[in-house]
Image (cartoon, rainbow, N blue to C red; front, side, top):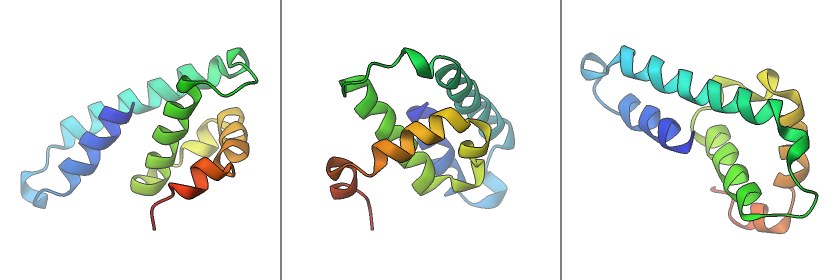
Length: 98
């Protein structure tokens, strides 16, 4: 998911006439499928913080920071709620870009 998000960001930085709408659509689809998969299995995440949750938190934070137009929170309400709780942790706040 993070790779596809990064690819969209980099593709959008190219000159408009050089951007590939097909690639952007494919990467958006990859992000959407990833979010849907995580949303469906959100209850399987353990209560204690794991490396997987840190990676997920970083990926969701990057989505918010660089691709807010994807509006993943309305698509994945359970994931958004979990991320809302997670994103207020000191570790996430201390690494938030300004």
